[in-house]
Image (tube, rainbow, N blue to C red; front, side):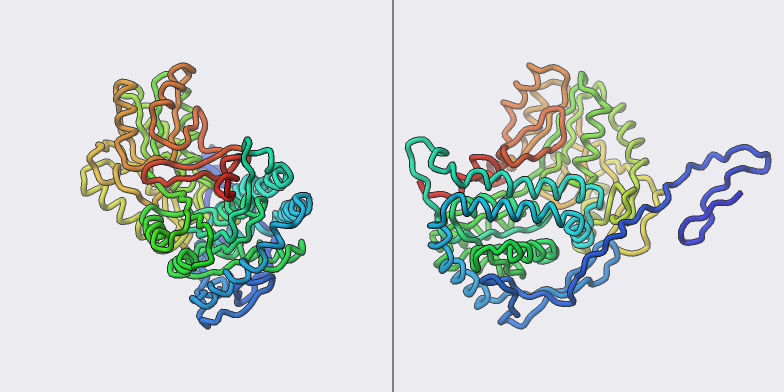
Length: 499
């Protein structure tokens, strides 16, 4: 008996000529998400509570990374558009700050509830826009976004108790500039605490992934958020620089690459504007011989290949104790072969496409560099890729040395590199052998070793026996060239108040 897939191609035979089962494995039937959100042909800028056409009269294409086709066009804000958004935020800020804390909380609670109500729609939209697998977007990303607004709504009437013997006052107009991954979550990280503290915001989402934040603007209007409290201006890097440079911007929060963060920091320094930076890095994962190897492998897969393991958070430098190096490589190869690459709207898919054509090109350059340096590439050539879009087979490098470029430089690619160590001291030295310090993971069954290694690592956040996990009540942020300032928790509030 023959079996065909949805394209009509023969995939497997249930029996061979002798009546025995074939060696080939079965594939899951497609489980495509049926919900399709309405997407307009063109989106303007959200300024002073309504969508307006850009004064620049320029629009950027929004590309679906799973097909490579244009979804719609989004406005590219010019300098006059940014000025209008900042002026609207400045005009709305005094009334918003004077509002009773309980009233501000009501708005944030309503926004959180509205995000929950529209979670399925937002998840599909985020998948179409960024390529994140629908399973991850729906089950993890959107609940986390809603929880951030819910958590900070609870802080609105407790600000006077948050900082001992000090009165917390709003800063004013906060500019939020986001590049790269998980734009809706990054928007929640910036908007929720700023609004809770009585500030107003001008947000610039990533130029190539702005649809979910534009839908968030619609939700702000639906919950009757006062005009001017949240303004969203889409556009290029230049748009973000105009926000940072504007004389009425009182604080800037940036999330993106280190190179882009340095440019924004220079702009803010010239304007004298306070800034918080959440930048990239080359984060280590240290795997000791006493660790649960299978658990560590699953953490690596989640961190480096799937869903909520974006490159900035990923522990893409795998430091493995020498005695288990071959076992870890073999198990990682076996696990990598089971990952399903395909349409991110298919609930069976583990790995969706890369975010953009540029990121795909960067992955290819990274792989070429690794091969040229003499490292070993592990990749299953039999994995089939979709015919369209920016899909890429999962892969990793072994035989990597700390001196290799693929182990040192900040990159925007989901390709882990495997290095070895012999002693805990060597593991710490190799983990800290980087100018960055965003995050790290430690895998060991010994509690004392876990805390000792975590204490010695130069990283803003260290996860122990777990892949990256985020909670609105817990702070996250880096040190050294990975930035300064925190998102989440009480520390996240501190970024948006004047004491």
